[in-house]
Image (cartoon, rainbow, N blue to C red; front, side, top):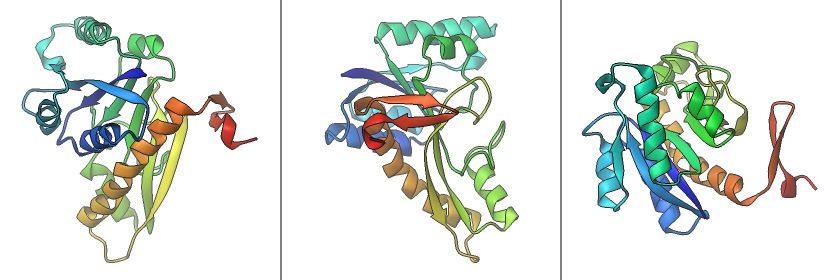
Length: 209
């Protein structure tokens, strides 16, 4: 059973859905650690309530990016982490960490990439952009992390139909509901079904025979 770390910076709703799925035995992994991007976030409170260790990695507390990266790497080694899930994590993942965990760092994005992604596109910024575009569909993307924001190979997507009268807040509500079931379901496939990456696509072996 692989040890999993969840990196979080916000309220922790996706973290909570992952924890609930783990406790219900919906995937064969162990959420062994929460890395909080700052003190006092909701995700850290949820972790503490479920007896999941919390470590803080706030880049503002370090004089140099390399020291920040070494701090994270030390924490991951301490808990023998094999898989990393980003759940509302706002910092770019250091290149050295991506190299140490190739195709083992996963992010969830509240839109259908490659649309409405990139630096600064997170949370309500995404949903306001979708609303302003007039599009009648949004969705959720789960992808491997590379050195660019919201850019790695897509693992799973699910579309969310929108209504012309939806506000950005309503769009966020519709999308979040899908996030909470798609993230655990996708993690289950990654942990339990052999896969390969081919032509920028993730192909799950047993599902394509």
